[in-house]
Amino acid sequence: MTEMLKTSQTPTVLITGGAGFIGSHTVERLLELDIRVRVLDNLSTGKRSNLDLDHPRLELMEGDVRDRALVKGVMAGVSHVVHLAAQVFTTASVEDPPASASHNIMGFVNVLHTAKEAGVKRFVYASSVAVYGNPAEIPSTEDSPLAPLSPYGLEKRTNEDYAALYGGLFGFASIGLRLSNVYGPRQDPSSPYSGVISQFVRKLWERQPLTLYGSGEQTRDFVYLGDVANTIVTALASDYHGICNVGRGEPISLLQLIDALAEIAGHRPEVLRLPRRAGDILHSVVDPSRLRKTLGVVPAISFKEGLRLLWNATAQVTPG
Ligand code: NAD
Ligand code: UD1
Image (tube, rainbow, N blue to C red; front, side, top):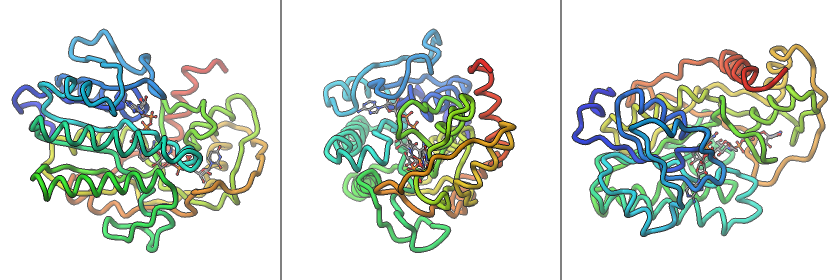
C-alpha cells in the first residue's frame, strides 16, 4: 500500500500536531518510507525532542493551525495532509469549551480549507470514538448514532460534518479515523488530564497511588500506538473516503487495567478513588470490521503485549 505514497509525485506529507504523541510516531514511519515530512505544531503538548530534527527530509514549522496565513504558507508544495493537531483533553473541553472549540473547530476548518484550496491529494484526520458518547450499541459501528457527551466529542463530530460537507460541496475527499484510546511510549503523563495509561504507568514507577475516577468499571478499547501509526500511513495511501473506526474491539475496564499493570510492575498500587468526571463516557468499544475491510488493517498488538512494550520502553527512560 505504501508503494502508492512512495511513487506519488513529489510526496510531501504535512503532519499537523506532528511533534505530539501519535504525530511523532507517524513522522518516524513516513521517514522510513523515504517521504518528505513537514510538521506544523505549536508545541503546546508536543515536544521538539519527539522529532529527529537533524533528519534531512524533516522540517518543523512552529506555529498554530488557526493562523490562516501561516497554514497557507506551510501548505505550499504539500501533496498529503495528516491533521492531528488538537486540544486532546476531554475534561479540559468541559472546563473551557470556547478554548477547546477554537483549536478543534477553527483549527480544523482552517487546515481543511487550505488543503482543499491547495489541491492536496489526500486528507487524513483524527476523529475520535468520543463522537459516540455512551454508545447506543456496543460495539459501535460507523453507522451507530452519535451523541457526544463532551465539547471535545462534539468538536470531533463537527470535524466529520465539515469533512463530509467539503466532499459534497467541493469534491474534496478525506478520511476521518475515529481513534479509540491510544497508548504507548511518549504519551505525556504530566497533565492531570493525560491519558489514563500514561498516568498509571508513571505512578506505578514512582510508587505513587493511582487516581481512579468513578467505579473503575468504565471500559475503553485500548489500541497500541504502533498500530495507529500504521493505520494512518495506510490511510494516506488508500483511496477510501469517509469515516473509519480504529480500535481492537475489546473492552477493557479500568479495574482490569490496574490488575494487568500491577502484574507487570510486580507490586499492587494504592488506589485513590474520586467521583466520576463530567463528560466521561462509561463504555467505549468499537467494531473494527471496516478498518479490516477497507484499509486491510488488523491491530496486531494485544493489550497485554502493548502494556509490556510500554513498560519496557518506560524502563529505558526512567531510572529504576
Ligand atoms: P498530543 O497532545 O500528543 O498531540 C497533539 C499535538 O497537537 C501536540 O503536538 C500539540 O502541541 C499540537 N497542537 C495542539 N493545538 C495546536 C494548535 N492550535 N496548532 C498547532 N499545533 C497544535 O495528542 P495525541 O494523543 O497525539 O493526539 C493526536 C490526535 O489524535 C488529536 O487530534 C486527538 O484528538 C486524536 N485522538 C487521540 C486519541 C488518544 O487516545 N491519544 C484518541 C482519539 C483521538
Ligand atoms: C482519550 C483521549 C481523547 C480521545 C479518547 C477516545 C487523551 C488525553 N484523551 O479520552 O483524546 O479522543 O480517548 O476515547 O489522550 N481516568 C482515571 N484516572 C486517571 C486518568 C483517567 O480513572 O488518572 C479515567 C477517566 O476518568 C476515564 C478513563 O480513565 O474514565 C479514560 O480516561 P482518558 O485516558 O483521559 O481517556 P478519554 O477521556 O477516554
